[in-house]
Structures are given as C-alpha cells and as structure tokens.
Amino acid sequence: MSKITETEISEINEELEKATAQEVLDWAVRRFGSNIALASSFGAEDVVVIDLLTKVTKTPRVFTLDTGRLHQETYNVIDAVREKYKIPIEIYFPQTSKVEEISTKDGENLFYKSVEQRTLCCHIRKREPLKRALSGLDAWIAGLRKDQASSRASIKKVEFDAVNGNIVKVNPMRDWTSEQVWSYIHENDVPYNKLFDQGYTSIGCAPCTRQTKPGEDPRAGRWWWETTTKECGLHYKFKV
Image 1 (tube, rainbow, N blue to C red):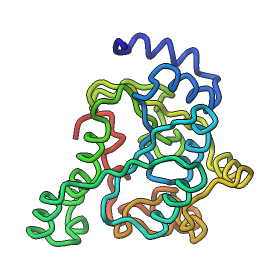
Image 2: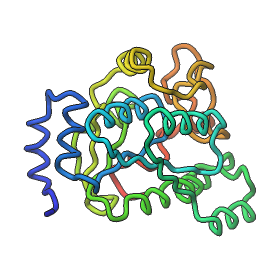
Image 3: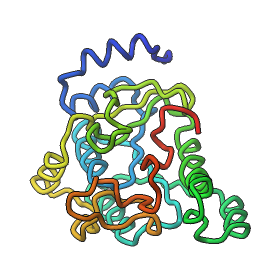
C-alpha cells in the first residue's frame, strides 16, 4: 500500500471530523489491516480503545511497553484484558544492556536527579522500545485526548508521524472527556487499572507516578518533582 501524504491526511481529517471513535477505528483497520497496532499503557482511554477495537476486528494488534518499573496493578489489568478479550498482547522490553549501563553509572533512581537523566531513562525504557514496536507498521493507534494536557490540545484524529518513520498516528479518543471514558468503562464492564480507584489520574512507571490531589491537573502526578511538560517523549511531534 502506498504511503499516505500529508495532503491526504488533511482530507481524511475533514471526513472524520464528526466521526465516532469506533468509526475512526473502523476506517483505520480497513485502511491499514494488520499493519496497524494500538500502543497501550493500559490507562483508562487505552482499555476503551481495546474494547472498541474488538468490535471492529476479531484480530486487533495491541502492544505495550514494559519498562521494568510498572505497578503490579498495571500487570493485573494486562492479564485481565488478555483474558476478557482473548487477544494476545505484544510485550516490548527495554534493551537490558542499556538499562544496566545507566543504572550502574547513575543509580536505579537517576530520574530524580535531573530532567536530562529522567529524559534519558524515558528514552531507554520507552522511546527506543516504541521504535522497535512500530518497525514495519504503516500506522499506530494511541489513546490521547485533547483535554488531557496543553501539549495535546491540538492533536488531530489522524496525524502524520514524522518522528517514527513517516507513518500514520490515529487518535480515536481525541474528543472524549474523562467522564465519557469512565462511563463507557463502567457501562461495558471494561477491565481497568485499580490504581484509578486510589486517586491516581494518570499512570506510568511506579517511581514516577503519584496520586493527584483534588483540583490538580490530571497529569500532575507524573514526574511531580519537575515543572516541565508532563510527557515522556512518546507523543512529541518533534524529535527528542
């Protein structure tokens, strides 16, 4: 299949502007077939996308990045999703030699020391495995919503991902609110991470995630010791 051009993506976004999340996923699966996969951290949005994907295709591709520092509750929901939907979950780990190198040089908790070292840890544990996971794909799906953070406010339902090899990125949840996400989860009995019941509003690696306080931004619990953009680099629109 020929690559989609940026001009075509603009036209597709016009066509899908009022489409539902399931309609966006249906378009994406029809367009890319087995060469599209969902990158899931098993957050609230991602489990909704998995449920919707199973309504669109019997063979959804789902992968996750196991950084080696995840909460046990995250592993529990991965198993629950695998069992409920009877689908395989592709697991990508960071390269052992690189984790050993930074841990030996800077310690197991290097991410607390500086933004640069935290970014390095994210690169080795997340961004490098993501590139391996996306290798050979024509498109990938993410559970991003535009009201999650200021850095995500301008996302489109379909984007041209120049950072990851000029492939397509699909954001079917773009227009959903948090309330809609949770209503869907409860109404459809979708497995979810039980840390959300304990005051977490965004979940990543265990050492880098805390519960949020009433009135705080939903991503305030991510890298809470920093004042920079609350992103690990997976969803930047520029190379890092």
